[in-house]
Image 1 (tube, rainbow, N blue to C red):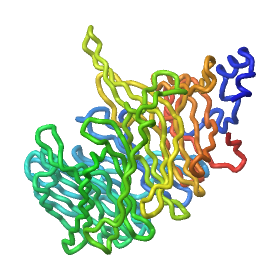
Image 2 (image 1 turned 120 degrees about the vertical axis):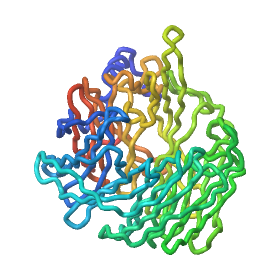
Image 3 (image 1 turned 30 degrees about the horizontal axis):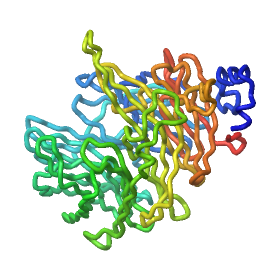
Image 4 (image 1 turned 180 degrees about the vertical axis):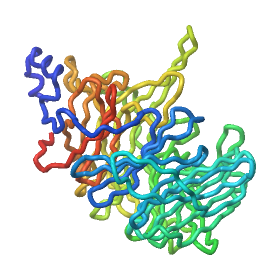
Length: 523
């Protein structure tokens, strides 16, 4: 910092104007493959799988809830960067779940909620791989399972693959208008995508509201569903519990129930460890409508039913909660105005687990003249927590990544649509993080300030990458500088070496391939 204070004000202005020159830029100008019909606000992208040098995606676009989805399977070749595309057509009302490779075919899973017949139907359809730049097909469906539902219910789908990739699980969860679970359909498929077992469970939750936090499948083929469960009278919540459902063939239904008397779970994830234990971690608040005060872990042993093996709870220090946003340019809030969302939970080599969480806040402003509502979004620091396999905390630290943005009239739930939040992946034992940041990283008045990235002004957007090796050992570089009418939208894929980056332009959307290099100059 002494060095910076000795730099002349003229040179500081130069640095502020072109701050990216202080670091190596690994991708000065993306010149990727154009993706047809990709709309950042209305397109949903799902990774299917990787086979050899090809990465397969399902792209679905609908400009309104009442419009039929326009869907296509995209085959991106990592060597040639050439696309093969198969347009797929299916009836309106078919809800896409996921797709997988089945031998030399692709199998696609959907469900249909027939409100007249009051049934939920799980179906599948098979197609070939895309074979050329543009072709089309109409899906024919086979029924897998059908079950009856009550009126005014909603159904959501979840899926997961086991660590050893021998099992793939599908789950349909139907809840009533009070968000009480009525039905749980669990399906386990083997590595050849053939059904090994499927069961419909009708658990009695005694009127308790459930929020589905995560779903996994074990190497034994058991389907696991993580719930935040509580009593709710009108808008008041009480008697909060963490519930972990274990579902298996022959109607084998087990619950791990843990009262969370310390507070209210805000966000959490589930991990099946290599030692077969179940690991849960997340963030909590002390009371309803309060901001995050700490984080927690639980571990469960599937061989010891209804028993919590370990339980740890950590409260952020008072200095954290009250600390003002020193070192950040406006608009950044004090820590006690932010909540946390648990985004990633991974098992690392060396018997450690890492959790990534991000500070975020949302406010609204109303225009007194026309009564238009503006939703404002704030992001501050990315926290990374390390744990032993028993859930005991091994410390945490954070990476500054201040961002803010807004949307008019309608709130957004996928913040990446506006270039906000981040994407992360694992590679060679390190955690890599991608996010948009302001090109004015150093403020001309206070050189140690972190300047907030403004998603409403993409002209100043540069793409940063952070590499976390361990607590306190963090490196950073600039992937792309600010480029007129082009900004980073999302990470499409990463295998720890190859990275596919999606960039949104004024007239087109493109995907560029990047490869991790040992020659990069990390700062």
